[in-house]
Image (tube, rainbow, N blue to C red):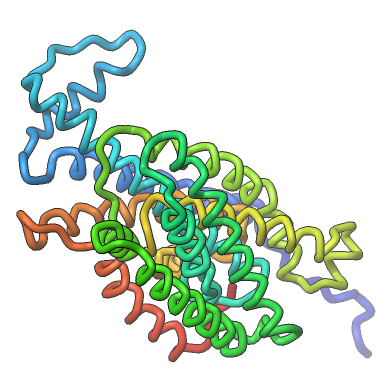
Length: 364
């Protein structure tokens, strides 16, 4: 005679459940603390490395002296302080802002298109932003505080045209990595050709300056580029952070998103606009820097999983760290000459892109 006692599934012990939750919480915290520690290391290394080396202890003392209520004896000479505050730190902060901007934009594009290959550079957004900035410079904008503030908006218009063109060409198949990639390649080629034509219309001196900028450079004297970029980073970055939960919902599909009260079309429009704005602002001060928005979100997902509430902020921190270290290499690998930052990111990102394409299983 069969027993009528209902079978029960083994329930996880409370201790095991608590341990699982604790482990799930500790992983993102550990990743965040680790990336912040790497960012601090990158800032110190970047501030001390260069044609005129600065002692790390002196840099630490100078930075600590800016904290409220902290007063430490300074060991840097006046000349070294000038180098630190007017050349090294502005460049380091600019590298971090640009890297974080491109990385968080890449995470936004990958989430909204549900496509692991979506990236500001591969979608043609960077090329469109570059064309907008080149045209603005070609019409006589000077690199002073007033005119340079208009560059991000000119770059934004070009970038918006590029990303719109990529999506329209790909149409309903934009979630297919190959289709969206080919559309982005077409847009990038078109805008690159337009950039080349615009350069031929400039005088030789200005054309050389603009071409050097297009290769991706972070050389700066003073804080003006940082002050110009920062408002766009804060505004667009905040929008992307606030919409990270929407990206998680969009991963479930449009029907599920609507059932949860989310408008897929509106969320995509907001995220794409914010990602395009922050990309354009970064390109307007740094030129074309490839693959930061592709590599960084993939690495973050390997660390903390696919939740965009974690991927978006961690991508910003890791992107800032990555480009700060790349900038150190750009300044030191062929010293006293300097490599364009975009060259190094391409050497790193192109093999990574081929790996992701070959693997074909990456999920956004």
